[in-house]
Length: 357
Image (tube, rainbow, N blue to C red; front, side):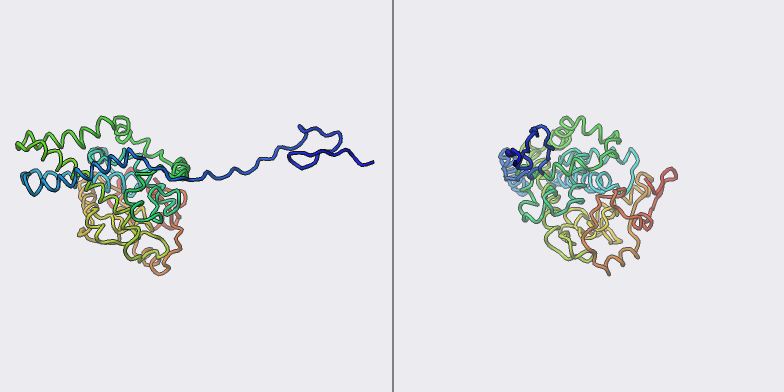
């Protein structure tokens, strides 16, 4: 006689004497979360207002501002830019050199003036960018177009992959730095003071500038200009230029961006060797103000263990043209090859440090 058979949700059949509880539990693969573009209208309103204010500030430069106010805005641009390039980028994101507490304090102040997030958050996003460049996990994926990689990524909700991959990035070195930990803890007190309040008050009280000129030139115009110079590294330097080190990746050598972003436009080289403190192969400071800044502090002992790439390694990479797999976020990443570490050039080394750090 044929056994009594009924349907089972797992095997499709349930034999006589079997209970539903006896069936093995099968874990079905979860469907990947679908990404839907969602505009953050608050950010759209804020950035639109800031850019309108910046245009007004540019108008005031040529119509009513004192020369000293414009020079002050340029000085703040340089300081805030250095806070991003030498601080958040080359020091904290990539660990391409080390700095004493005095220099780290200066860079923290400069970085706060720039108002592009606390350094630890900036560095986290940038490490993700290098590890997963031009994928959905890249915060400003250039394959989504110039506008998105320039500013659009700040106007939309993050792709789920950005958050997921970001959680796997090691930030223990940054969390152990008391100076940027202090910045992170008190950011919403330090940032308004250093980025907006003091830059507005200084021209008014030191050389009797008007409030409108004091606010819209060294604050709004300077801030928006600095933002756009930083964004050009994500957009223009990922879309336009030549690729002498790795022709298979998006980042390119862009002289215009290098000039405006204080040496950050040599981007094909930088994505191949992200732990080189110069972010370029160049041996001069003509289009790399940040390297000059770091070298100056190296000479007085405040910057040390400056890492750079040997000529032989550069030549080898140029000949090979690369394969597009060199995705390390900086010195010490688990995917960095031993060959790179062995051939790295250390200058201004500190006796208490080691190459393994």
